[in-house]
Image (cartoon, rainbow, N blue to C red; front, top):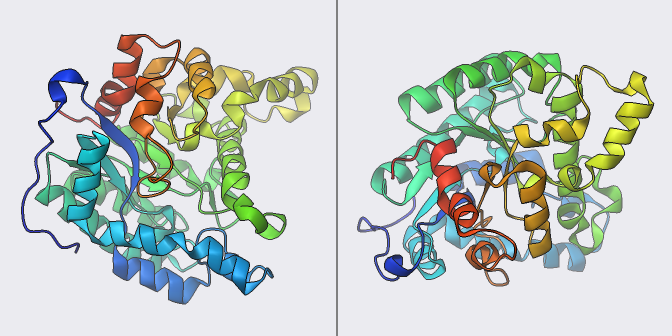
Length: 351
């Protein structure tokens, strides 16, 4: 468990001059689970850059941020200090979706996910005024995933789970996973969809494109699976938060719509055109272009969007709070919703 010596309350300075801020997208990994994945999976750094046929020099450059990120997973005091500096009062902490070890058997995946979830729960117990916990589950074994989901919510009091965008070649919307979606809807907690690299990275290893270009595509594919396989209609109360603003689909839904309208055979089980489903999902603000935030608000409504940092990634180059507070075209009420009210409602955070 990460080292710390005191409970840290929300920062008092400046609160009279600014709204409450909740970070809905942040990572926190158990070091034993992370080490196990590095050693056993052969998948390092999300983009699998160590096994993709690019030069060692280029691979090392892409993996260099892991040291910076790893320190912030281990050092709770450093994390709290940086949250204070950023003006963030509470943070929703999740593991990497890879903690479910989809490449392993269900028993191993459950062991790793459970260990990770216990670590997240311990962190929340030590700092209940600063952290909200989200677990993960071994989706390669739906029965075990359902069991661990129940334990996360009912025993550990975590507020949802995070999973990857595809489970070892099986899309999220496929029937195999429907028992999980039914239980999620029953428990009334959200699932966060976060890619772990890209399924076909061969063309994307150079220039870090497995992350910058391909992960938004993974999110678009995951959303499409939910829509075309009928999940959004079968489970209308399900709460699905798509990371990174939903990837490409919310911003390019018109092409999916024209295909749906012109080619009925492509509709699958969807009862309406794809853009009509966009407001059924939830989104974070981790997409960096200010004009895209205003567009997404118009597309899905400001009540479906919440501020995220992707901590501890990109902290040196992006001010996630100012991204919202300085956004043009948004009302004060809309900004307050995005900064904290929507996350508080989705994750059932008492304010």
